[in-house]
Length: 258
Image (cartoon, rainbow, N blue to C red):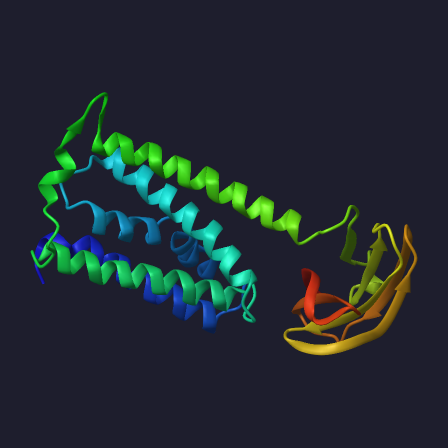
């Protein structure tokens, strides 16, 4: 492999390590967080930038702006896409999605750098009245990010077809004698009575189910749950509505030390 592609090989290596750590270490691992952060904020955008622009056609600052901007756009749109899938917004699904985009773009960038692309890189230096194409793309990227944020907000509003909302929370209970106890609550701020089902998972295993929680408008439900003794656990609370028993309505996660 040519020396000019060493940056792409580094991106591939970091991506592979990040994915491996996602599936092999706990989420509270400092090493895991350090390695996976670039996969979220930098690597997908850098790989796509390498596809669009050959080396030398962008300055360091421009390439950094593109990398961060494209990565943010990918995270926004990727989160929206994952929210519609059965996999949900989990670390494993995020890792697979971002790694697939990054590695696919790396392959395309390597092919382009080897001269197999039919798109001539010279056209990126063409000027249009008032802007270079590079400047126009930077403005276009900013517009894409803004539009993506608007789309996400609009869809979120559409998923709440009537005024009001439901709150779900999970908190550790204070005190040394209750270190393995968590406090859960559901608050119905909808404009009508609601029927819920609440499931609590600990490290992916179901530990408690409340099959039917009926709340009138502006009514609150609370409970405490004693967890099995262990050092660190990931406690998830999944709330479902009776009218949509297979669709998660609210989801909260607590990393708890017992």
